[in-house]
Image 1 (cartoon, rainbow, N blue to C red):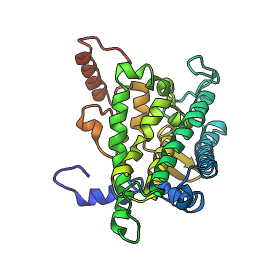
Image 2: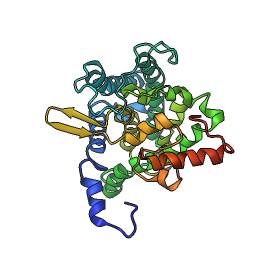
Image 3: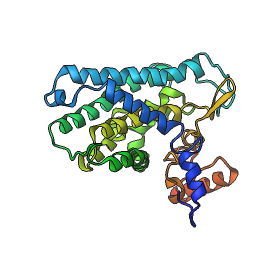
Length: 311
């Protein structure tokens, strides 16, 4: 998308190829959002007044979705270990017990923060946004009056999420914030599925705050649900620890090697690659020796000649 002079064939391959911008993950998130909006979201009229009924429904479906989505990956790849360590970045498995994690193990620690903090804060942002929409306090367009904009937003939301994620991610890597907040997520140097949503509550609050876009930009409440669902589901494939998921003769690329490197090297690859923000800001690392040298040079410049291994 950002090559000059433009390469139309490359853009088409990136948009519609496999893997690409749409397939497989964006298609999965859009389809999931459509099903959830139509079959697991209360009627907007019922949300005009706060009620435990509709709030509880949204909380329960977000909780169930998280358990199925993250738990499915964990069960297949880490519990059953159906493909062993094939395509696994780190050949070691997460330790059964660990002093660095709150409950003595990476899995229990990740499960706690994902379900006790991540899902409730995700739900709170969604309920507040839907309540505002139901009461006519948000700028709203619908499919009938603005079909082109309705579809365009589905494509634009992942791009906006990339920019928002990069900005928040860089901010919480500031030393004064990192130790108090983001270090919890970085306990997972050998990440597994539930590591993706395992964050400090303040980080969850910032991470899901991208939905504020729909408080100012004309959209449909579906877009807000899709936006938050994209944020809620995408950390799972991003933290699988596997480059490829293999099922019999079929392989599904995860294409998240860059984020795995972030968990091991800390100061690189803050974005997920939809937009080359890390290349533009000099924080990209592709796993090569040259990238190691550039990272070391940047650390030396930052710390006055001393280059610590991590923050």
